[in-house]
Image (cartoon, rainbow, N blue to C red; front, side, top):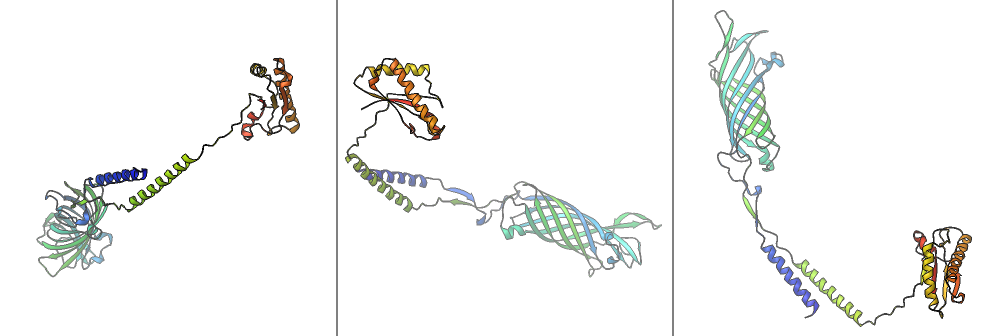
Length: 395
C-alpha cells in the first residue's frame, strides 16, 4: 500500500474517532432566562421590611408655618412576597404624624400660631400595595443585580390619635380622634442589594388622605423613608432548563488539511527517491596537525607539561624518518602590534624546534616557519586558540 494512501486511511480513522467522540458528548443543560421564568415555591421570595423617615404635609394655611416646622416623623413595617421577578404584593402597618394650621380649633389642636390654630395628628394605618420591579421589566431579570427600581401603589385605612386636654385646658396625653380616613398612595423604591438576603432602600412616596367627616377634603402628604429588607428562603428565580447541543463541525477545513498533508507526503516521497538515487558524495577531510601547543598572551615559554608532550611527539617523528614535519608559529592579530606578534611567532616556533632537537629529532625532518594569519580565525572572543605552534606532517 502506498504511503499516501496509508496516511489518508489513518487521517480518516482519526477524523471518524473525533466525530464519534464529539457526537458522544453529553448534551449540556443550562438555565436560560430569555425563555421565561418558572414560578418558585410559595414559601420562596417572601420579605419583611422596616422603615423610618420624614413627611412634608401639604394643606391649606400650612405655608404660613416655618419650613422646617412642617416636617414630621413616620415609620412602617411591611410583609410581602414576589410572585415573579416583576410582580409582587405587600401589606403593612404605618405610622404618620401630620402637622398643620387651621382657622378653627380642629381635631388635634395643641396651640396657637399667629392667627391660626396648630394641630397635630398621629395616624396609624393598614396598607396594601401592588409592586412592579421596573428594572427587571425593562432590562430583564439578572441574578445578583445590585440596584432595582420598584414602582408601587395601593390604598389603606388610617386611625387618628390626637392631643387631648383636661377640663383646665391642659394637654393630657393622646386620644382617638374619631376622624378615621381612607388613603391612596404611590411611590418609588430605590433598592440596593447588600447580599442575597439583605438590602437597603430609599422610598419616596406621595399619600392622598380623605377625612370621613368631610369627604370632599383632600390632604396630600409627601413622605421619604430609609428602610431595610430581609428576604426569606430562595431569593432568586428559576429559569427554564434548555439543552445546549454542541455545534456540528464543518469538515471542509479538515478535508483541506488532509489534502495538504497528502501533498506534503508526496513531496517527501519524491525527495526520498531523489536522495536514494543520488550517488554518495566523498568529502576529503584534511588531516589535522600532529600536535598543537598553546601559549598565554605575550608568552613563548613552554611549561613542563608542554615539554613532556613534545618529548612524545619527538618519538613519533623519529619513528617516521622518511617524513618531514612543519613547525609553524602563530600569534593572534587582535592584540599587540605587528612587530611584537611577529617576534612571538618566531620565538614560539624556535622554542618548539629546540625541544624536538634536544629529544633526538633529525634537523632535516623539520621545516620551521611562521604564519601571519590567525590559526582558527573565529573572532576576537576565541583569540586564545590563535596563540600556538602546530606540528604537522608534510604530505
